[in-house]
Image 1 (cartoon, rainbow, N blue to C red):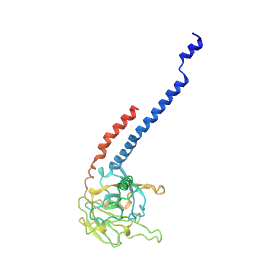
Image 2 (cartoon, helix red, strand yellow; image 1 turned 135 degrees about the horizontal axis):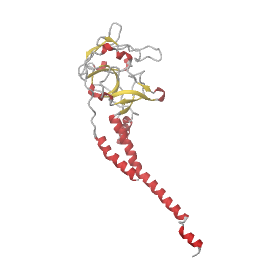
Image 3 (tube, rainbow, N blue to C red; image 1 turned 180 degrees about the vertical axis):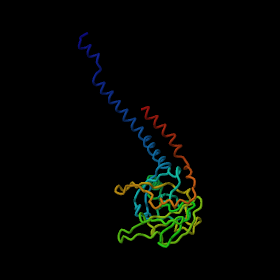
Image 4 (cartoon, rainbow, N blue to C red; image 1 turned 90 degrees about the vertical axis):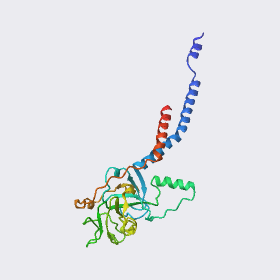
Length: 287
């Protein structure tokens, strides 16, 4: 046999190598497109699990918390914090409105299944308003005696006057600040009750507006969703939402302690995640 013929049979042809390489690339592309729906499902499930148990974004639909929060702001709400510590005076909380509370903004009902799905996704990820979720500042906690107003027009908690100039609404045109309250109230909060008010006192349907309700304007602690702790949108308004100094006065601490909120109901999302996540990981590692 000639040397050149022997050499020709001993090395694989370039054409065969290129063909195998093309087939491998095709298989990889095919596997990616097969995995993509599962990976998307995993991402959505993880986002919903985080939203259900840990942190949820909320859209600010009204001006009731101006100037602290403006219409269109997005805030992140910590849903874990009140399972580890008590709700504190000065916390800005999101809660489900009691049945007697009317919505502060009217949200049109979806007209078909598609718009209903879009609305659900929008509210879940904080890009659309909800009708019965409220955001207010906690003024009084269980055991507190909350009253309006003293001789200087200030709200008092357990006889201690609050200095609310740091956060009550200031009109951007005439620079006049809202009074702490135009309507009087005098309530001692029972176990499981909170007194809440918006920072825009002249434009907030808060506890004051519901004193003829079954809990005299108070809201149940069990309806609290979580604490708004940071503004994330728009970018030029990003920042934390701290507790004002006036609520840190030692003389305020005369109320009863109450148990942290119970853990949220797991519901169907974690169960579905328990199926989807292992399946996705198995597919990923097998590939």
